[in-house]
Image 1 (cartoon, one colour):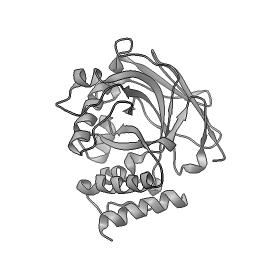
Image 2 (cartoon, rainbow, N blue to C red):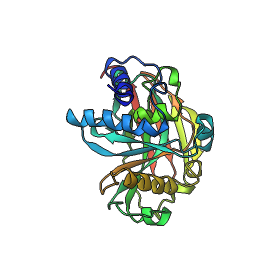
Image 3 (tube, helix red, strand yellow):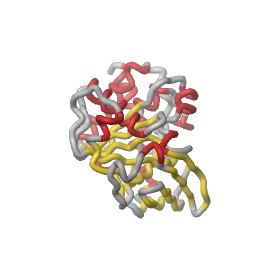
Amino acid sequence: MNNVGTAAERLATAARERVPCAPVRDLIGDDEAYAVQQLNIASQLARGAAVVGRKIGLTSPAVQQQLGVDQPDFGVLLDDMAFKDGDVLPTSRLLQPKVEAELAFVLKADLAEGPFDEETVAKAVGYVQASLEIVDSRISGWDITFADTVADNASSGLFVLGTEHAELGDVVPKDVSMVLSVNGEERSTGNGAACLGDPLTALAWLATIAVKLGAPLKAGDVVLSGALGPMVPVQAGDHVEATITGLGAVRAKFGKEA
């Protein structure tokens, strides 16, 4: 097995056995990280999972600086990661969960040909929803570099979509404000501008790299924009609620059973 395969197996074993593993940066560099991600996603698809969209990560300049990178990353959203507003989430599927509030773009058209900018991707957006992303790391202690998180499907876990929909124009992504509470206590605040200056900028970046990698975004895809504020650790029993201006609230409870 080559290093890409070894890294993929290390992460897959951690996910399967629910035991965090050592980082994979000893095996791969940044250039190989997406190959590891794609290998593990292919294995999940072979077992019956389906792709429902993508998530954008590393959209905060502070986090980029922390990891020594100058661009976002992305992960793949699968159908078994998706939950509805108010659902009880299976904490037993998670290792080291943290929660973020984000915008979810639902596409009405393919984004198959660039170049892309905020205006071109906006035309492909059917509507926007509030969302919670539960990020998770298969790597012990969140001891990650860019290569580690990309290989680990951009530290994806689960996601929850709100019930309210809005069209672009009724909601301006860069102007929204967000408040996230855990057990009724305000824990994170932010706004659309915290996401690369404009969540549509993040969407244009993703559309560009998705075409480059031969897997363009398609109508019906859900795209999580990247965090609007700091992520917050959570545990079994926690109730989380995020409100985003123009999009209402999205809620979830972290249960103790799968």
